[in-house]
Image (cartoon, rainbow, N blue to C red; front, side, top):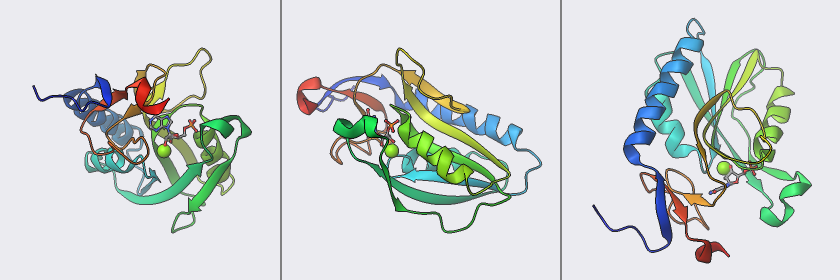
Amino acid sequence: MSVLNPDLARIIVNQEEIQSRVRVIAEQISADYSGVNNLYVVAILKGAFIFAADLTRHLTVPHTIDFMALSSYGKSTALSGEVRLLMDLREPITHRHVLIVEDIVDSGQTLEYLLKTLGGRLPKSLKTCALVRKEKEVITLPVDYLGFEIPDVWVVGYGLDYAEIHRTLPYIAELKKEVYT
Ligand code: IMP
Ligand code: MG
């Protein structure tokens, strides 16, 4: 066992758990979209890049991958519903089957923004996939394909960061409260 980085409190989802769950989700998606000739996978930067890379490599249906970059204005304005679009898709999605791939659902405002924005472009279908969702008293938003429910704490790893640090850890770990408060 290697020593955990001192910023981290504990591992919440380990590497093996992530990898086997990603495989199962990819099988579900492949089954649900069987017969679809080109699933349009939209990965949300930066956080979803690792999850999307692993997930799409297990898909057995034909697919195209594209990226969108978003930024929320930060925790202090989390209730304002303001999400900034930093980089849009390369192609129109009208009449296409679209699957949004996100790293994490916290308040749900990012996913809500995406559903509204991409839904307005009249895709043939629009579904959501997220690796983790934080457990809240009230369910924030339904997700079509969900990896794990996790406690409502700040997590890093497998694409998730704190101030751009810890993104490339192979597991999802809880950040110590003293690091971010
Ligand atoms: P939302 O509150 O559901 O809109 O979450 C928006 C974004 O905040 C996510 O896509 C992540 O980029 C980021 N985020 C929320 N919670 C965490 C966390 O615990 N660790 C790292 N990033 C997070
Ligand atoms: Mg994100």
